[in-house]
Length: 250
Image 1 (cartoon, helix red, strand yellow):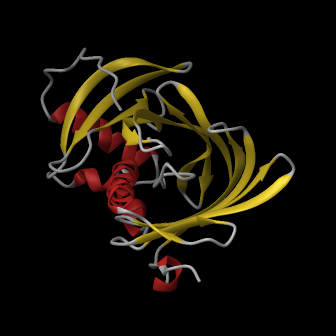
Image 2: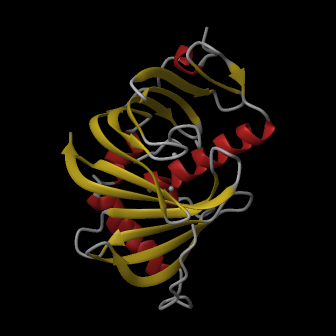
């Protein structure tokens, strides 16, 4: 379940629980194994080479606005995001494209190449998306630490911290009963390039071709709602997308 850094901040940390903070690596790996099975199983998740999504919702910062979005994501860090925004009864089109090394963004026809900080952020957001996909955590280069139990909304949850050298730590929280991913937390840059604690909530799961995928997502920055999106269409793909999808927009 890859998630793109959504709507100009690139789209999910730090919550210290520590009930099992001194647990052995086997405990968090067991949690991840159950989550992989719950989301469709290792064989199915490993077969996903790209994901395309459509959605609609509201963004709340810097001002409230409705949007529709189309997203193409290909691991480890390629994405193409197209967003139609409605602000004060006026329509604007925002886009961001990243090919893994370079990227571009713009609004209503203007194109700007991503600067060094934005490229770094896009790569870090790609890392977060990889972690959220769960299947990469089979690789022992990812260190897993148990965070213990708490609540995510009305759900009893258990947490795992994911650490990899050179990348942000990501905290994942899973439903104790269904083993589905409920929340991800990590440090990120907001649209003003200010570092924030960002969390993504994964809600209203549905079955898509044997995969469990969220039907709704909410992203909060420093505890304040940044955006919410209803995911109207999710298409897992077993073949990579054409390179033109991630080329510089004309």
